[in-house]
Length: 135
Image (cartoon, rainbow, N blue to C red):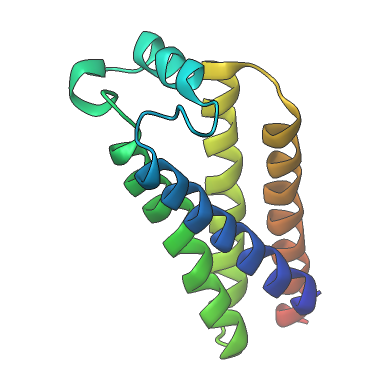
């Protein structure tokens, strides 16, 4: 179970870093075909003229919310810290909430659906680990 958690936290954390880098390399989203996504964000999110002129702020939020948290959980897992399952559970919940927000903005799509499942697996694996810790 811990190997699965290590894999997922690393995979999701690295994915968040790559996603943030893509947003910073091309803030317009043109290079990656993401301009329509920016327009959808501007239409649905508050303060579009402040936060959604380009993808730079979104990259920072992605990195902070889904990158750093996943890497922190990974570190705790490798150190076999007693709070590691709690961190993984929190990361799973955070990722699922992130995806619910994506669904609200962009609707259902393959990548978001897969990442929701990753978050669900993280949360369930953490609960199993916590139960094993208690017994």
